[in-house]
Amino acid sequence: MVDIVMVGTVALDSVKTPFGQKDDILGGSATYGSYAASFFAQPGIVAVVGDDFPQDNLQLLKEKGISTDGIEVSGKTFRWSGEYEFDMNEAKTLDTQLNALATFSPKIPEEYKEAKFLFLANIDPNLQLAVLEQTNADFVMLDSMNFWIESARDKLLEVISKVDVLLLNDGEARQLFNTANLVKAAKQAMDLGPKYVIFKKGEHGALLFSDGKVFNAPGYPLEDLKDPTGAGDSFAGAFIGYIAKTKDLSEPNIRKAVVYGSVVASFNVEDFSLENMKRLSLEKIEQRFNEMQELRSF
Image (cartoon, rainbow, N blue to C red; front, side):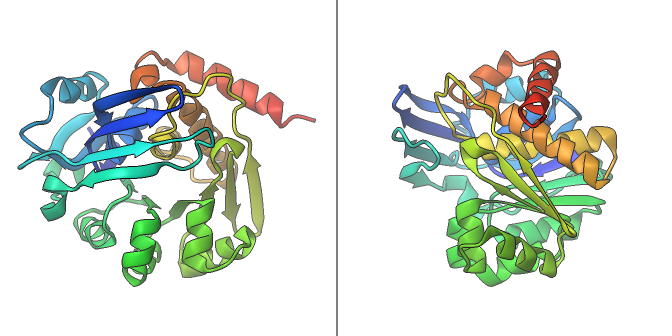
């Protein structure tokens, strides 16, 4: 039984940071999101890969309890290449090869259609709308990026009006709503329809906005940081995974979900791809969650 449908990308990444370089490693928004969610609930991925996609990557996902029934195989796999400098809040894209993603049309497997939770990860807003028409989720979260803000703004705003949670980084929020003030950006976002708006601030944590309330979740202070790729998707996956586990949509529980998102994202950035996540346990997540509570206790 799939609890959460994750619609996004499964990719092969080549990443260079000040702490190393890795080529053709497992990446993609649906990959990171589903793996993070799997610590709390059972996700199912909707994505496309090519004939060149390594089978052991699919096996890794299956062994974590992630359904891959919604992953299509066609052509060549989506590939992304990027580089980070010492300010690792934003990657410099070196190369993007859409390949099979260029003609991808998401199809939701029948066994996914009863899932009550849906994460629309960073893909074309037209595809996100197509997914919404095929599902009947009670709780929908949306992520996007500057490329879609620039090229499909009106369609993106239409999708935002149909979801419960909007998730953007702070730069994307300022760009989409044409304001330097995140409080004003959040108000504009909620006027469109979402009950909750989350602005990610990288190593500085995240801001959660709801009706008349603001919650500032800290970032976990890390000593070892190797690769921030997938941090936002790990945040999103853990967030919606915790909500799916608890089935509690109250504002206090949404706050807890934001902290769990920050916790799992902090583990993700400590190594390349899913390497540190593969060593992660729920016990370690709970331990760091308790440490995060101490950071905000006074």
